[in-house]
Amino acid sequence: MSKPAYMVVDARSSDPERMAEYRRLSQIAVNAYGGRFLVRGAPYVTLEGSWQPQRVVVVEFPSMDAARTFYDSPEYVAARTARAGVSDFDMLLVEGF
Image 1 (cartoon, rainbow, N blue to C red):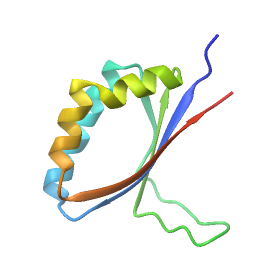
Image 2: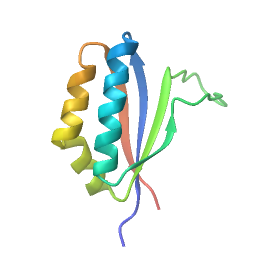
Image 3: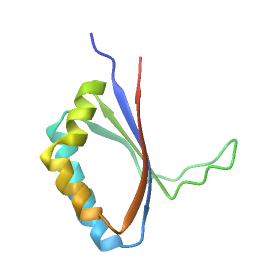
């Protein structure tokens, strides 16, 4: 049985209109590859350290392989293209248990 995987993103953007299109396209891609949003820009509290992300997003996938397939998919490449030049993302993928 495969373990779930979690994509954690700190998203920063300078163009809300272009990011709306990115969000629309990324939702399509996430759905197509078995993912689901757990957190999407909700308020947060920093409990320790100095990390102050602009927008936190957490997406759950059925496995690391499914998440990697999503990331390289034509659907998500289109979403990444939509945000090119107006956003910076820190993104990591971590395996759950």
